[in-house]
Length: 332
Image (cartoon, rainbow, N blue to C red; front, side, top):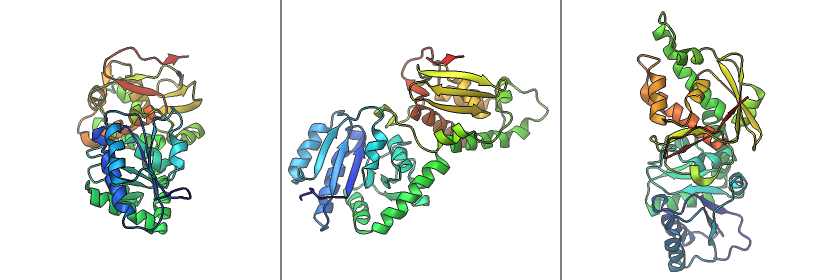
């Protein structure tokens, strides 16, 4: 298939790792090409983690080298620009709890195809931001075919993808959801002496302009965050982050001085930020927050905290690692 004039591109942007199943995408695309007349292309972007040689052999075996290509890893900060060039984003991996690359694709209006074991699958299916299929080659190929043959589907999914990313998973949306969870529990502790964490969770105002600007679109972070979320890794503040306390202990302004985007954290968001010091894992943070309340809905709180930490990582404000250590943020 000659793609010199192709305008429909499927993009895979993730590590070339067996868990991500890039060879399955090659098989699905090869199957698709036999059933359609339109020209398509498939681009696989990301660092090799053991699967590149297998993918290259799969491309040769399926005779798809004219229109399936491996582009290699991207430079940090180039993810969103590359996403915007794609027609549809495909992530064939299974049991993916919180794929950052899918959120990034949706944030720039690129529809997605994920498997039904993906943690974001229920949200994607409900909103119409893409297609959720089972993990078989046949199902993935059928999902790809629908996007090629139904232009209206792609247009509606693109609009839904932007809406889902901004309204459900943006930094401000996640912060608001987390705040609502804790505010709903606050009444159960009425009359008790507030703990330091509870004091930081008090009060909630409207979003600041900088919060809206930052929360409306996901940041451009390196591909190290495009993978499985490990609750046992230690969270620390990024080295290039400056922190300015505001309005007492209930609000703080944080800024990645290299990226230049300020974010106002208050209420529960500020409480979590205070706990990110390089010595706590996600599990530790959850335990300390939960201890401030009785009767907390643990799964709901855990998901909101996980979303918030992922958002901080997206914007270059925090990161996780395998060993504890001092955080690199600066306070002014």
